[in-house]
Amino acid sequence: MHTAIQVENLTRVFNQRGRAPFHALRGVSFDVSYGEIFGLLGPNGAGKTTTIKIMSTLLLPTSGCATVAGFDVEKDYTHVRPLISLISGGETSGYGILTVEEQLWMFSQFYGMETPLARARIEEYLKVVGMWDSRRQQMNRLSTGMRQKVNLVRGLVTDPKVLFLDEPTLGVDVEASVIIRSIVRDWVQEKPERSVILTTHYMAEADELCSRVAIINHGLILANAAPSQLKQDLDSRAHYEITVDRLDGKQFDLITAFMGEGNDLVLGADKVTNNPMLVAHLMHESDIVRLITALAGQGVTLEYMRKLEPTLEDAFLKMVGRRFEDEEAASPVS
Amino acid sequence: MKKQLLLFLRTLNARAYVRIFGQMREATWVVASVLGGFFTMATYIYLYRTLGTGSEFSGLVVLGGFMTPFFLNVLWGVATQLYWEKEMGNLELMLVSPAPLSAFLVGLSVGGAMHTMLRSLSVLFFGIAVFKVKFTVLHLPLALLVFLVTLFSMYGLGIVFSSLFLYHGRDAWRTADLVMEPTSVLSGTYFPARFLGLGLLGIAALIPTTLGLDALRQLLVPSFTVRVLDWRWELLILIGLGLVFAFIASWALRSVEYKARRDARLTLRWQ
Image (cartoon, rainbow over all chains, first blue to last red; front, side, top):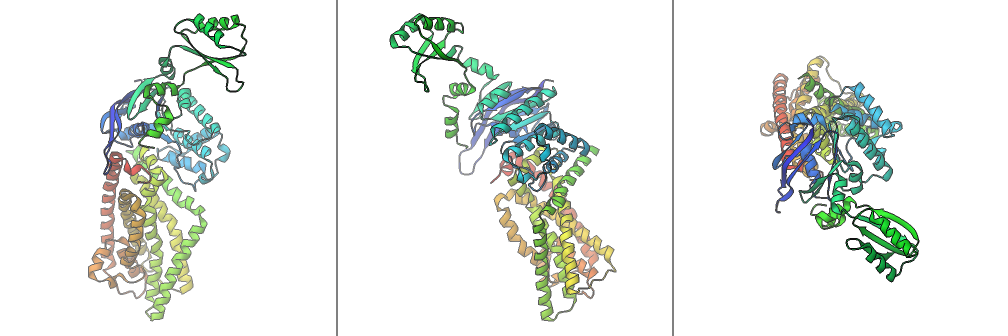
């Protein structure tokens, strides 16, 4: 069996007193294989958390079905729960009066773990996140980043098959975010029967971690593919940014004519040096050689050149028609 | 089956641990609650002495002071607890885990009762030491049995209320505040419950502290005669109440979990 999670035509409607029902999910379908980090990417209110809540047995779907490790999340939820862990960003769970060690032990007991095994895993993972020395510190004295590392350890100690990460780096500083991402990546690679569902609205995080990403907006999945595929589908042309020492209008027209139809060149100025800057959208990767030759032929010296890679943000923009932040601002749920 | 039982016991133990050891770290709170209980008790003892009532009234007040921390623990530490767990973000994690909700609540009840015991015994000790109150120890084992059955019944009621309070959401605090004083009065914490009269006693008997305290007073306070019923009947009623509360609590917890999954509202903060 290779499917850790299967979601079919999932819908969820929230009835709100005195207001029209809110359709959080409108027929979401996807599957996740073992060994995979699968990303649900979308702005606030897109339906990411609702999907995670249904998969983690916290919420019933209005229609459709979802299975985790072959168990129906609605009917067989008692079989699903021992196999999963949920970690949310900005989480303040647990009890401030407990120490880090006590808190992690307490949560391990809610999964029926034997204390010696729990203590061994707590030590192992606290060392991994660099918090072994803080094990006797009270939870209410920890910084946000430290607290989130403890939350991550809490999720890993029980050795789940499926780990749900709901915005795990929300409000966490860069260093802690890097550590969390690195641990998640290593953890899923450690055993083949593990998988991770990550919801995030940090595009770069999804790009870095996920083998596949589903872009979700207004309760609908707009795309489901590898991040590289999503970016490739966006535009097959090669994009370059080239800063030169000088380039007048006449020279630019000559070079444009030389490159031919299908290769678009835009002339601007570098924001820092104010030198001429060419943005080239080329039909083929190899056209860059012709462009550099043409520039050299005009006696122009190259100062700086970089290849422009499309981002998931660009993919989102193409699919939704608005930038991610604009979509968040317009979302009914903030 | 064995696995389920172990899961239940481990969850119970872990949740009780927070109550027993975690709260010991808040020493000022422990001291404040002991002093608060002592001074309330002292007020009533001085009042009865001013009125020239018999010495048995001082004894019944000390027992009332002994039981009050348990009553407060049931109300603020059990009945409102699911609501606070939700506010702290723990309820979601409790529901996602394989442990049943009842294990958490039994755990915090056991932990709460053990933690409260320290405060209650302190109040009892100060009552005996400062006011020279005398108790008979002839029926101590029976009194202990009545006390444990009363706790079972009280905490059972607390678990029933925890589901109700969770469902009421933000009103939980006000509801707890609202029921605290009337329940204290109806329980006859600082006076013999028989003085409530038959009509009110019918309602008061549903609160385990009423009959529990009355039975304890019969067994421990010499010359206490203003009883509600014979302590044996009161013990039987308390056992019955405990079983009924346990049954309702089990049903209510299943029901509240289903509603939590159906409506989403119950697991979301600030709802």
